[in-house]
Length: 125
Image 1: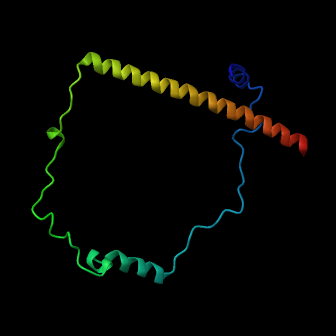
Image 2 (image 1 turned 135 degrees about the horizontal axis):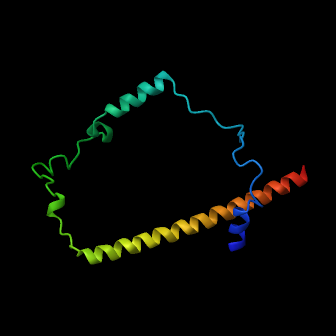
Image 3 (image 1 turned 180 degrees about the vertical axis):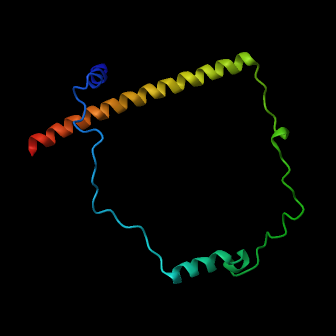
């Protein structure tokens, strides 16, 4: 695995044109909507819940007078001392560093694969 990274750093396996233009043909066009379809969607949007079900909502008055007054200060939060916070921060930073290193290795591996595929295509054409 280390040799892949070293080879890419030496640009031995770098793609010949890494920033070249990629042409993609045959992509589907964006959907188009008629004026009638747009008006129908607007009409559906304005329907009431009762009308959508064809009957009255049985829970309509169930929550009358109930207020959602929970705020962040109401929630119990265990306080960590600064030493624990520092340890947690360091652990999180180490996890991010590991993830970054794994991502970088995967990227270099994919670049090496791309270079190999480009070379194969050049040989075939």
